[in-house]
Image (cartoon, rainbow, N blue to C red; front, top):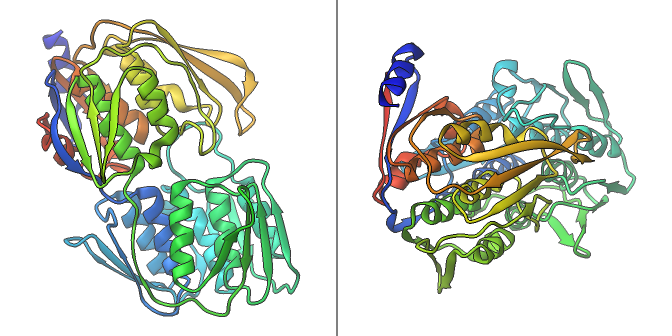
Length: 447
């Protein structure tokens, strides 16, 4: 096996960085989690709704997606400055002029969609090439388009999306057929500065990251309130003010640490982390045998127990998060029994399973008789627990699948190599440092 790995590495012929992980050790220690990517990106966009300066703290400024988004904002006239040492970003959108976004940059990140709502708030037109992100199947943007059209804007779809601002004095009601994360944010951004206009968003997303952005907007002077568990009411205001705001911790990175602790049989404390950020996931993992305790402001994880097979179905928040599904699948690879993982959100989510099977996992992915949210054929992964995983040469298929194979390598005895590191680093800017702090033997190198 060792010679095969060396041959594959030598034949890769790439200057791209890779991870080398010598696994098998139990993770031990304490860590603190960085700011959430999925809260930081929309918070940066929200900050550009203000004429004044908004300072954001705890921003994962090292992430490629953050850097790409900031470039797009600056190109469209926003004033954005980054302090990487202190993880701070200051923003003002007073000089926003809109226009045509650079395709090569905008096409790499899905959060570029949020600039449509931002531009409408500034009464400027915008042209956006098809947004990028992870290749996880058919990721629709129809709810974004429909929401923006609800405000009387002219929205066209060809090779990209173009939006032309048109004034409207009518109140707006938006009914989402699914609690869309990005669609909810786009509607919020388009609505908050429509002075005197009442906007109602039914079936709005309730993700903690959306709540964090709403908290920021209200601090800036917006009037955004929940009428009930599913309906947001926005009363448009004339302008938004400058404020300071700290981005919430990344619950998906928190879940990654929990899963890594469970898989390696370790004991870890995550400082300043509330289990309420992972209510569904932690309940599932406790049911499977993982010890997880809230100790004042910290989360304690004891992974020394053998886990038992536990089924999940991914759902919109507060259900089990599709981004955390790969970590649960990974935990089930060495659990007792057979578990079923039903993915109802993204049809392309299971690509990482092939990589885990290279490491000795026993996962089969089958088409099923249900449809995902995007209308594609649904799939179920069946996971039969094995005794242990083995080191191998694998790639990060996407951000979350990449995290799953990297965490698998932490548990597998011997040296594993993770390629396509770009994908992992789109969501984990400090993966090496985070797990080195917990005792992992992990290096980022160039071959």
